[in-house]
Length: 490
Image 1 (cartoon, rainbow, N blue to C red):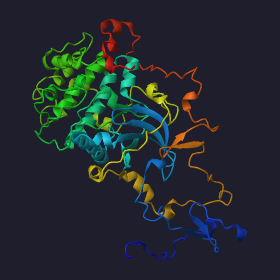
Image 2 (image 1 turned 120 degrees about the vertical axis):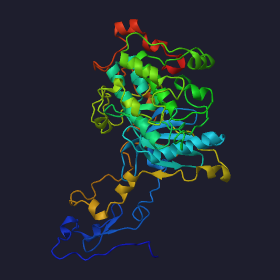
Image 3 (image 1 turned 135 degrees about the horizontal axis):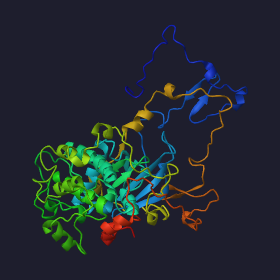
Image 4 (image 1 turned 135 degrees about the vertical axis):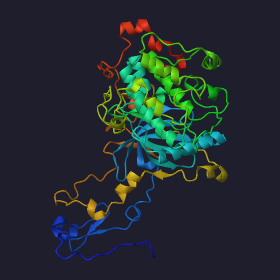
């Protein structure tokens, strides 16, 4: 039994105040003694802690679908869905998260998909940065993988760009500078991102950037190392990916240039009616810039969109350093920026932490149901997902705090006053192991609610953002009207 109860017993130092019995509630009627929340009040008026899996070795936290209540659908992809969820147990009960669900069977069919999934989970665990989304939990069931991420109510930068059409240069500069720091940090860890686009950039409640979706990242790219996987979104892909000639960190700086062009003009720099013609343009076409861009913006875009990675800004051993010294970023204080002390040009208009108004209603209006987990993988197939489970250190720190330190004096009036029903005060139903939010009258389908007067997201009044209603900008450059159909909102 050695090591099971490793308790250090100390005598109370002379003169040090002991915990008073007055802090505990001693009922007048001994017959009314009851167990509450795992604590017994004994005849001496002292509480005794029941030894259960919840109180012994709390660091060994087990999390699964049953611990989360599905609230909304935030997005959907080839491998699964992203949900907004509420935690309904443990120390962070009631907190809102984003849950990414991946289907094992779909991933396991392709060795590269399996490698990318494992890389995403490892990167999210190992990389902590102010402008990169945080992984809180990771767990798996027989047929699915689950990533529990911080919920970012500001939604995708893509949605903001769609609403506004194009950004003014100072607005674009803010977003690009935060993204640059995130990419620089990934590169310092030997990671290339390879999927930089507006849909993969989220905004937190204050308007700061957070990179998400690390499914196409490649690890262990150090020095001049290259990889050859063909991946990404065509319009933002660097030429060396398209030619499969081997690519390194410089591909992310090309994508930053394509993103910058998109922000300032309303569409990526090289687009056509099909994939083949788009690829031909990226490889062969001359860059065309609208006349209203400043010399600083034009200069940075040109240097980021050099077709040769050796000539590209950021393509050398100094990585992001020359970018940060470029005149386009002359007003950026990089030290203040990394401390999140620079005020964002746009603050998302959200009512509370559950607000999903900044996400596409095509998804948020759907009923949040996780599809059945009915696929059974063989033991050998499941071996590739060993070690997927993860709990963020911040969660474990909360669980491992000393019990006395967490204990608060309890008033007799408060004992027994806490709600002892289900974890959510709202009526809930179980779907595939998850609780799904429903109204208190038991109406489970949230889509049946009256939507005749939908809430319209308040338009930004920031002078730093150019809108589609700005006639001069529409004439100078038509903005997102030039965006290819598959890159537009439906």
